[in-house]
Length: 159
Image 1 (tube, rainbow, N blue to C red):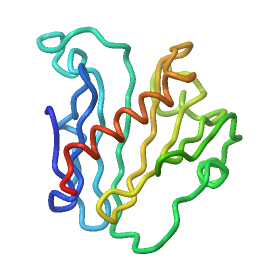
Image 2 (image 1 turned 60 degrees about the vertical axis):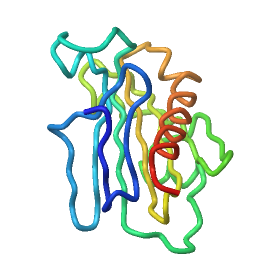
Image 3 (image 1 turned 120 degrees about the horizontal axis):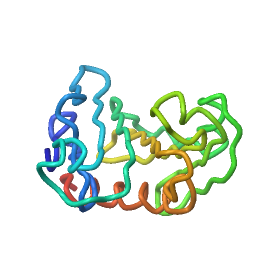
């Protein structure tokens, strides 16, 4: 899928160029919505999309957060039970690079992975990016990817 509408259309999820929403993992629940973004080429078995660096980016959208403040990078690490390697809060996006756990989610994955959070139309949106061992996406490029996906969601979602 090029994009998917979640929480009644309040949040429209899409990947950057070359990345698609996996329709198999799409879950529109009552309290939580979930989507996975990955390479269009990989998701289609090589039938569509150009080559892009492999990664898996999960998007979790919760119910309305009201006036609840965003968690900081330290809180994202604490919630995951991992050590914070790097983190920042900028332009309404919190990102945290975590020390361990990526390999448990992605076969051949790097232990280091990224988490992020932002608010879209009153809903807390959580992001997690997992990449193969040694991928540049486990470094600064992963933070850039989280920002790009957040920007894409903001651009496509109603304001």
